[in-house]
Image (cartoon, rainbow, N blue to C red):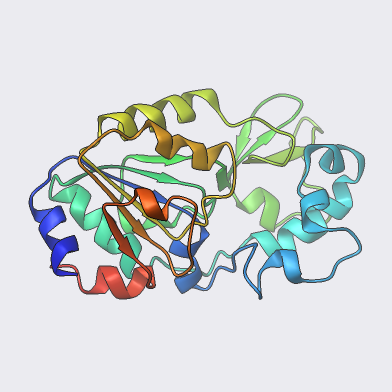
Length: 235
């Protein structure tokens, strides 16, 4: 922690790259842990349900799963979210790059957030393109539909779908210009998102994760602990 605090104090161009572990301490389950969605039982595997083709062919079943398991609207930002927002206000943190879709970084006050996999809070009509808030999904009985009659789709990246090009470009720009890259709460196994850290050529790479990753040997500082504990001890 002493070394981590020194890195934060001595740099003013920091980028944070986070995964599901950032939000688990807010009560949002991840996908790949023992208790994650991938280890629960459904008629179809979550990877199948959360695919573009399944959304098109079995839209009603998609929404039964999505409304039940993917919306955690009572979740609140935790100590990691609030610490990152504070670092941004202090001029230390330049951007957050996240694989999460829960919007908790913005709720905590972060302004420059690149949501690689989209957000549950944005939804759009597949027919007319009109955007809708989360209420359109929550309040729907069955498949949510726009006033024009079109199906409303969450603005989240499903399996078989590409990442948003502008978002990726922004994330790459931030990471490649950073002096410090803090990677936290991610197994770094989800591509192409995890491949973005290869664009980092700065001074210090910090990895914070409970379990080992393929990038551990590349880290200048490796902390095998929970994000909440680490950021709660940040000066």
